[in-house]
Amino acid sequence: MNIFQPSCLSILGVLLVFFLQGSCTDQVVEVHKAVGDSLDLIADYPKENLEVQWKYKDIEIAEYDKNEIKKLKSQYYERLEMNADNISITVKDLKLQDSVLFSIVAKTNSTQHPTKFINLHVHDLIRDVQIESNDSWLSSKNICMFHLWCQASGDPNSSYSWSGYTVKTGQNLNISLHLAESATLNCTANNTISVKHTTKTVECREPSGTVLGVAGFLQMYLLIAGGVGIIAVVIFSGTVAACCRWRKHTGKEQSEGGNTVYEDVNTDGIAKKRTESVVNGMTIYETVDDMKGTQNLPQTLYDKINYQRHPAVSANTSSPYQEVL
Image (cartoon, rainbow, N blue to C red):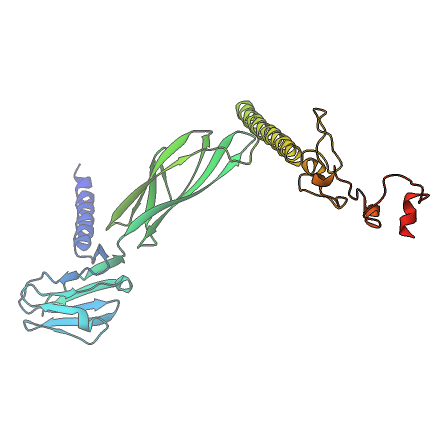
């Protein structure tokens, strides 16, 4: 039994050494900040005979010695704020390029304290999230294929997750929907310091250029037939109206014109004067006033040669034309 006691003591000793070494190892702290925030680097050690150096990477930016803090020339010089009460410095107005490893090195005359490492991550705030999408119609299966992607403005390294219709991580999402089916999707973007989300609803609709179903074909046929019928009625009505107007106009002209200039007997068989049978009065053939028809006056154009033409042949004349000679 006693031969195992030295080995047990040696094992305990080794474990104690490893524990003590682990407790004295350097500390690394992960810190996430937003653009414009501030970072406090505190040296929480006993102040007696304490000397502290603040560094980024291997470049010293500030030091504490003899109860006094002073900043050194560096890219952070204008943005450093000193606080001697708690032995700390503050880096203000953080930028994306400030995502570096800071360190705090502290010691006294007799002690070297473990170095503290602050691994800083500076992020942009997520200001907005949008869901973009495009779709295509798969006629062989009568379904719509949707390709969606989530885009956050601010931090390009944001993480994305989908919920609602389906659950998935990642920026892109592909889904399929049957005709008239819809889906509401929610996308969440986060980057440790901020979270934003948005919602979008998509619906599967048959493209206008695809082949119509039976109901759609019948509806289209009825619409076309109705349109043709209306056009036919309009054309027929217009034709009838035009014919009626033409006949009315023709009858009016005939009634206004009456008998021709050659007509001297009206329809009731009663003889009319030539001036009464002509609408516009005398014609080019009219030379003698109708009122003189009963007198012994010239009746034709030839009678003017001998105005006092004898009505019959006498003993002194052999013919009516001898008076001319």
